[in-house]
Length: 178
Length: 178
DNA sequence: CGCAATTACTTGAGAGTTCAACTATTGGAG
DNA sequence: CTCCAATAGTTGAACTCTCAAGTAATTGCG
Image (cartoon, rainbow over the protein chains, first blue to last red):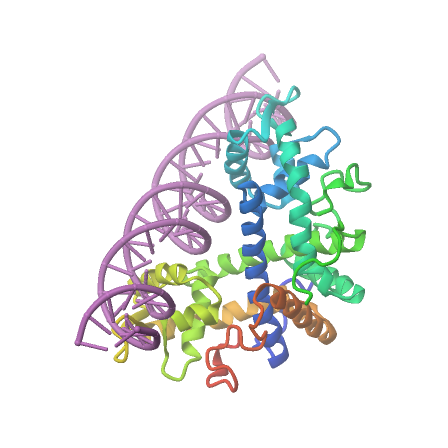
């Protein structure tokens, strides 16, 4: 087992500390940037955009609340609040689940899909500009590897490739682009 | 100049998309993890820990609000709210700036320093466990490089090495370790 | 079948962040 | 020396997220 620290305590090396501070600054600012771009463009934060994006990648355009929360790796409570807001905006609808009266299915509305499609290019461009146009192909690969290692630590059992992917293997609509 | 997209619009490649989703999941979960560890350990979120850490690395243990906000790359408003809370906890004190009656100097209290010192090992261990014990030295280097590229895009003019470093070149107290 | 344990989801309070004012002070142009 | 623009910092409302607790339907054990 190597989940927790079997190894004795240590501080960060200078190189690690340099990387850590750069990461903290970069990830915080990247998150703010995405939120600002999307709030200006569509009046919603990045977290909500991802919800719409996940729903759009589903064959039916809908997903049980619990399944959606699992794909997004967020709490059900958080998802409830978010879907409340998206429902009020008219971008998501809650359908009853015929097979389980407890459950409800969050569905992308036509309006929601329109907003997503209209917003995606701006959003993707901001990601490309801030991130991918600045990285070499090798760095993109390392970006994935490093993120996957961290994810292994914090979401053990979650394959890095299935996370944020509703219909795990084989994408239905790659149209979202991010 | 290559700040914005001179290049025509494009979606993400499959590799980029894979990296992006892994990053989104990893950074979100890492942030939650750090907040949970620190909230359990010291009753404060990670953002507040960093404030204490920055103050502790200053020769005097204090910094003007504006300078502190600049080092942390956060808004003055956010800092005001945070320092209000930290002051209420007794971990930070606001001193008057003798040279400018508008300004105030946020200072680490003795109690604040104690909390920081007591909390640091747990916090650093959580970072080591979740991140650095899982990366090769080359990946640590790439982690820094990638973060720096992103930071260049979003905080142009900010050297990746001066960010989150109060007394820019030559650290006074490396005791915080992260 | 009957009821306890589990699962699905919601609720509401508390905390942190953002954004757009707003106050107080300083500095520089004329 | 007088003002006015810029700077330092604060305020409060709106929003999102977390956490603990609650409701409702389902499962499965005896």
